[in-house]
Length: 307
Ligand SMILES: [Zn+2]
Ligand SMILES: [Zn+2]
Image 1 (tube, rainbow, N blue to C red):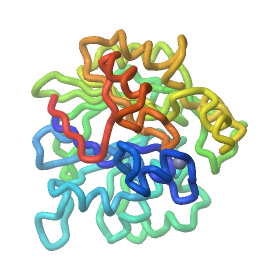
Image 2: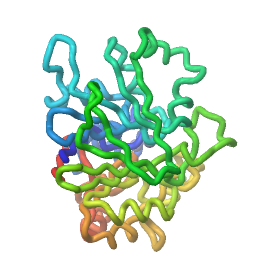
Image 3: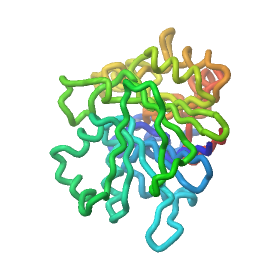
Image 4: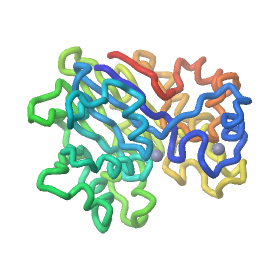
């Protein structure tokens, strides 16, 4: 399985347009050891020719252009066979509306996530201009089995997918009082040829049996790296909400996700969906040193892996 990180930042990107935190100011001015990052999206492929996107960020056009394997091979064409959505937040879905140029799209997600984006959304009609423009492949977080990620011609791609519920919340623009297990999912993607698998958990509020089981079985684990600490935004005066209130498991502390990932020694472990305020973005920070010492990596745009 080939994996390319198209974007590694959380919602807002790095730097974020309206943020004057030390990280954002420093990366704009070039005064800190940190690279700018676009919002989280990852491309996966079994053969290097046909690709699936995990999430569709607002920067999708720029991200597709940044990776030549995603460029068209004919007058009207895309190597992108499908897009998997892990939750309904706009940083994960808004890019769909930028793919409106009459290209058939296959979307893989839960019914809750797909309905949350499409229902009552007048702009979604731009993806409904002809029959079959968008096809939904529904994922069931209660199902034990895998399903094939299929090429646009219906043939199996060589990648199998299993979705599982990850502790989270409905998308911010939806009713927050009616959450359910299909609002936020993790993915286990397996290459049928090599048998290797990727656990993809870009947003998760806390540990759960399903998250532990998927991460423990995988050869690579991409994990929610949004916030270093629970009160990161509060300490900066940027918000009154704790990381957990936004359904993101903080990295640091005795109950942080770094402790959990440090124990998964057989897998390559990579933090992704990193908020611009996170001190580990600075390559020379003590926080980055702690992550590295635990055997965990920090994703950057353009990073590639082969499993
Ligand atoms: Zn997000
Ligand atoms: Zn910032």
